[in-house]
Length: 169
Ligand SMILES: Cc1cc2nc3c(=O)[nH]c(=O)nc-3n(C[C@H](O)[C@H](O)[C@H](O)COP(=O)(O)O)c2cc1C
Image (cartoon, rainbow, N blue to C red):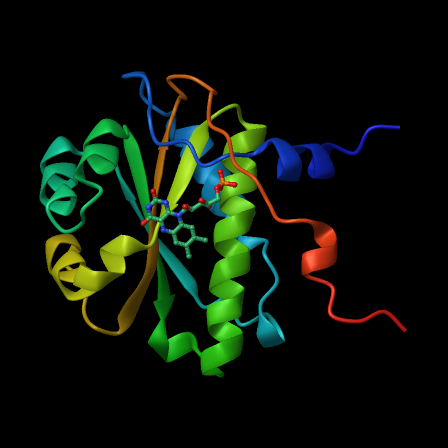
């Protein structure tokens, strides 16, 4: 028996180099759709998205992070926000945003695309809002860079399972 979700979880890697091929609008919408099917407390669905493919916006955003090369190299970006007016619990809404982003990464993997979660850009999140024309009601959680992988040589590792399990009763 095969377990496609487990396969995607284990084979997904952060992809930071892309070909020049565009990402289709259908694929970008599928990734957002996977995001909105993440769980959220009270099913309040506090996430909001900005889909970016225009060069001029990508160029401006690339200057707001040390990962300029990733942003410039990625044919598509999705900025993931929390709508602070839709929030009900600080911790739980942030957890929901994390589950949304993970769904999006797995969707990209399932579609044969490569993606990386860029968190460093949060250092300049006010500047990002200005570039995207959004008020401070929208709190940036991450920018996801997406494209067709230039290669799949990325390696990653995890510590042993036993390092994480505090107790077993
Ligand atoms: C909250 C968060 C922030 C991250 N920020 C960045 C980032 O700013 N730049 C980057 O290249 N990768 C970033 N990553 C990706 C991690 O570096 C990556 O997930 C980790 O090294 C494990 O590699 P893997 O995703 O290939 O398993 C971030 C991941 C998370 C969950």
